[in-house]
Amino acid sequence: MEIIGFGLAIFIGLLLSLLGGGGSILTVPVLVYIFKLPPSIATAYSLLIVGSASLLGSVDYLRRGLASPRTALFFSFPSFMMVFISRKYLVPALPEVVMESNGWVVTKSTLMMLLFAVLMVLSAQSMIRGRRERVDTGEEIRKRLNYPLIFVEGLLVGTLTGFVGVGGGFLIIPVLANFVRLPMKLAVGTSLMIIAINSCIGFLGDLGQHTMDWKFLGEFTSLTLLGVVVGTGLSRRIPGQVLKPAFGWFTLLMGTGILLKELVF
Image 1 (spheres, rainbow, N blue to C red):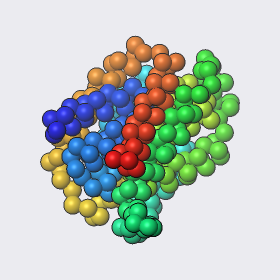
Image 2: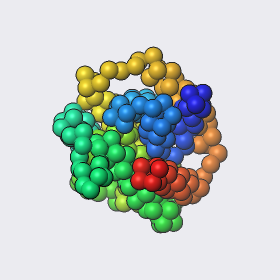
Image 3: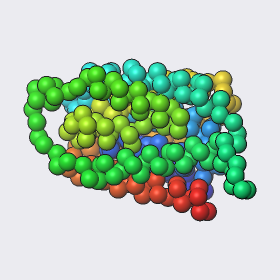
């Protein structure tokens, strides 16, 4: 099973560099269900793994002019503040048993995984049903950007992703593509920049909260970075119209799988 898990690490990097998100969608379940880590530890590890991979991937997109640093900064500033606060104070403050009724117990770990899955399903629907992508000039894109709205969206996404311990691409991509209305490939590059900032800041909030297995983290992260290198090459050949629904269906599949695992099995 560990061999399968490390093989999936490469796929995680591939997926992240192609879609600008989805890394955490696989990373957290792989760490929880294959490597048997508690969700609180898995989400902490996921922040470093996905953050490192996103940083590497964003460099290539930025070099090709497929990232908007200004949008990333407006989104990231409120977002990483909320990620840090959530990881440092909100998650540790939750009791181990959140709710108990008629023999049904909801633990902190179960709550985190369920919220993670519900957010995935909701964000997937917006991508599958999203508007047909227009080809706009850079000037048209800049004119319609609503930076105060982007700031508020950053606050909300940062709070949610900080709680579930993920980079947040599965929420950031729908926001950038459907609400900010960036072309898909520009949304991917911008998302990678945001994820890199949010994840690294969030991981700092986890330092001192858990005992880290740095050897395992180094091995898993290295394989994920290998996947990023492969994915950035493939991204040059795949059109954005294909990536958007593909991201949605993949997110829906993974979210449904986690819901079934937590509620049924």
